[in-house]
Amino acid sequence: MSEFVQFLMSGLTVGAVYALVALGFTLVYNASDVVNFAQGEFVMLGGMVTVFASAAGVPLPLAALIAVGVSIVVGLLLYWCAIAPARGASAVTLIIITIGASILLRGAAQIVFDKHFHKLPSFSGDAPINLLGAAVQPQSFWVLGGTAVIVLLLYLFLERTLLGKAVLATAANRLAAQLVGISTATVMALAFGGSAAIGAVAGILVTPITLTSYDVGTLLALKGFAAAMLGGMGNPLGAVAGGLLLGLLESFGAGYISSTYKDAFAFLVILGVLFAAPQGLFGRRAVNRV
Amino acid sequence: MRSLSRRSKTLIALAVVIAVLPLTFPSSYYLRVAALVWVSAFAAIGLNILMGKAGQVSLGHAGFFGIGAYAVAIGPTHLGLPSVAAIFIGTLLSALLAYLVGRPILRLKGHYLAIATLGLGVLIALVITTESRWTGGPDGMPVAKLTVFGWRASGSDVWYWLTGTMLLAGAWVALNLDDTPTGRAFRALHDSEVAARVAGVDVNRFKLQAFVIAAVYASLAGSALALMNGFVNPDQAGFLHSVELVTMVVLGGLGSVVSSIVGAAVLIMLPQMLTVFQEYENFLLGLIIIVSMIFMREGIVPMAWKLMTRRRA
Image 1 (cartoon, rainbow over the protein chains, first blue to last red):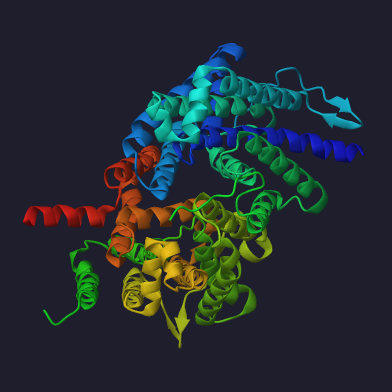
Image 2: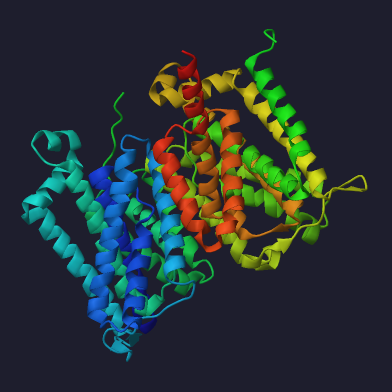
């Protein structure tokens, strides 16, 4: 039982990070149809900027705030300098642009920071909390709580504010949204900025557990993309569910089957799900227009 | 010259370039870079059949490249096979794998196809990295030199000619494909899958064929690179290498053999030139990819072609 809880908690913790990356993917995808492979780099930026700001003597909460700010600026720059000028390009071209952006950001991080691994102190100590016989790191609760807060805030924003409705309208039908006077360019910039902020928060929350370095973004982007797909691309709740599910699969797979193939489970499951349900678990069936 | 088809002209031009280029090289380093270009171009030509002709994307093609590369590494070292047999087995394995997973994968569309092929590539790379008893793990392993009837292929000039010939053969096959029923089916598929199906094209079969052909090209290129380098490592099967191959195809221009070669040349030579900038290398590479994709959306070759014909008109 304690073993089960242990795997459950570590799976949920990792899964929460995947969920946040997938959520960022979904936000950008809904607003602009772009699959942003640079999404993982925001997680890297969040962690790295916080590490280096706090090493420079800035108190941790302020350092975290700076990191989120930096990531938002980078996200907006990504939209204005790389995505907006390429409007109308094919999906593959846009994917290559975002992959180029992720290589660029990694290169920039390597220059500005360094190539070593870095750690942040846990937010509330390292004494493990006993949960049904399992020793759980307090930071896990920060990750899970932070994810819940972000999902809730995003939900409130989308459902309760005019700007949020504009985002939903743009996601539903860009042309129609434009016709009723919504500035879709603003919505897209907002989506990139927002997804950058979400990614950065994920990076800050998880760095005390998993460490960070300039190149953590790639694998996170792949897993986040996989999670978003698992949940059905474009469905925010599906993205969160997909992320958590992926984290749990990895954790239980590593615990009960094979830890050397931990990273493989995610992709095996993706392939399995896509073979059985080509639109993801919670995706709508796409209808082809001829 | 009028009696020659465009296909023959392309092949002759390519042969002339391959033959004349070494005369301009000041050192054997250039021969090595050029051989790298030929190998990558070979893989890109294959991928371009899948992407440019059949209109399907693969973000995991380096996986097949890796299978070819590791076949010539593992075969001679662990199984005592001659390299030539190992090349053949690697190709067969790649083709078989592509055939088996191709059918369910190619039913998917758009981003779902992208993630499925990506997953396939990542899985192959993971197996290579993890089975270190056979593959040497993340550090890679040495590859025995290619020996044919007692003759050992080594030296950058030998490999320049070997890879150059290989590229020529690959280009010849790809160009000929255009005028076969299969090639025409691919084009129909690319333009509109629904229309192709309505016109009686067995869409799934031809997609699968393109996938297998592309896998075979990648596998052969992988074997050639491994034998040339005398070393393999898992990066050759990794996600970033898959992206590099896709970028070659898109950057050069979809659907043409010449474009694939140009795309490969640009993407292989850029990092070689950028090594001068050392730690700025990744930053600049990313920047160049973004800028060229924004301003040359259709690829370098179609863009240059457009500029040339516009000037003439």
